[in-house]
Every structure is written in structure tokens, then in C-alpha cells.
Image 1 (tube, helix red, strand yellow):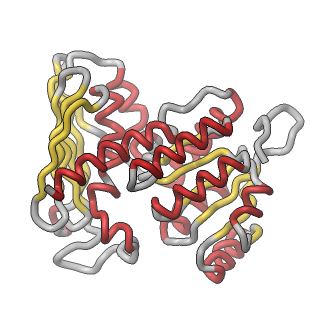
Image 2: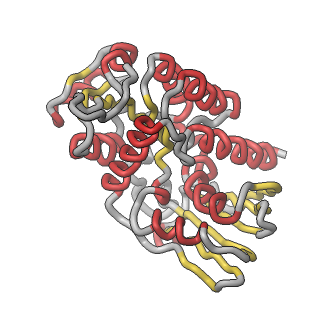
Image 3: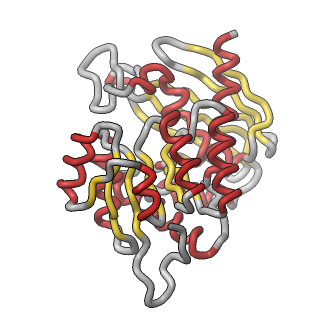
Length: 305
């Protein structure tokens, strides 16, 4: 149901949600319901009772079939495991829907590339919700650093306590794909989403394992800078945290803290609607998501060796 979104005098774009888990309840659905520039059209989920519950909470339609949702919406938001998301995103693009994707887009290069190719082939806009690129003040901070030069090195860490060895698992622990793929795939996209635009494309990568599901990436970038990223979902609670430090000729710069994730999701939807209206691809779109999958897949191969 693709259209020229937000032309004067035309109805606001309709956005449908696919997925009913904790992330959908806490972030996606509240942000879609509160968004001033679009209408939350309805929900589809793999568990019909959960979809009905979420739809009732926001007084929207529950869809029994995703293709029906695609037919009645201008854009679709995904809150699904990556390898469920990818084939549905290809179908949504073929139906003319703009894509607000979750990260990672997919955990195989073939499926991630299929999503990016489908978006390009069918002329739909896409944005991947990478929290640090839409939350404030982190999003503005990243743009400031992109304008600097002379970078030497950077160090990032995202140590989550989703599966802590010393306490109760988080609300996101009932996630088979996170258990299977760990921090590399779940939080690795966040770190890369900052390192790449600031330091340049990744030209070399080395991956090593640590305790629990810890993975350390050592990267080289087109700017010549080197960076590291330490990633985990199994950190002890006292060790959990997120940080990123950049060092270069202009000084040392630390990633600021952030909050209001639903607000960040609203800004991601703003970016998608802007790309749909203008026809100018967003740099955080499916093509970037496919590149992130390529890097993470290369790291995963090294970890198996």
C-alpha cells in the first residue's frame, strides 16, 4: 500500500506492527501509538492470543495474516527474531510497504542481502532501529564525531546482563535467538553503528572469545584507525554497562548516556517517513543493515575456527 507519505490534505501513513514480545510491548507499540505523524494500524504476531492482547491495549486492529496487514498499511515495523523478520520484510517490500527493521536485519548474509535488494527493487524506504543512532543525546554526538578527523583509535563495550551468572535473567531472556547468537549478534550492531560512520568502513576484522558469551572484535577502518568492541549478554550484573571512547588528533570523546528508547523509536519512524516522502535513502537503512550482518557473519566464522 505504498504511497506518497504525508502530502498535504492526504491521510496520515498507516503503520502496522509485526511481533508481540517484550520489546514490542515496551518500545514499538507505545512509540507507534504516540507518534504524531502516523496512525498505528494494527498488530500481527505468531501467537494470536498475544497479538490480540497487544492490539486491545492500544485499541488497534489485530491481523490474523501478515499479508493482510501489508495490504492495509503504508509501512511496517518489525519486533521479531531476525531470521523471522527477514523473509517477512521481503514480502512486505513486495507489497509496497516501507520497512522499519530491528537489528540485526538477519543472521545470514544471504537473508540480509535479500531484504536490502527487495527494498531497492520495489522502491520502498527502510530504516534499521539502531538505538544509539536515534536516541538523544547519542545520535547528535555521533553526528558531531563524524565531522571530526584525525581519529587514532576507539574502544567500545556493550556488556549486557540478559543472562547473568549471578542473578535473575532479564525480561529479554526468553529469546531463543539471543541464547543461540549471544552478544555478538544482539549488541554488536549497536557498537558497529557508531564505529563505522565515525571511523569509516571496516577493512579488516579479527574476533576472539572470552568468558561466557564474550566476544572481542578488533577492527581496522578506512580512516586508518583501529577499534575494538567487547560484546556480551552474559555479564555479571556488577560488570554490566555500555561505553564507547574515541581518541584522535582533536582529543578524547566519550559516548554520552541516553534514555527514552520509545522516543528514539519515534525518531526512527520519523526518519523512515522522511525517506519515503523524499525518496532519499536513509544511511541507516537495509543496505547498512546488510553490511552489519556481513561483518558479524565474518566474525562468527572466525570464532568457529
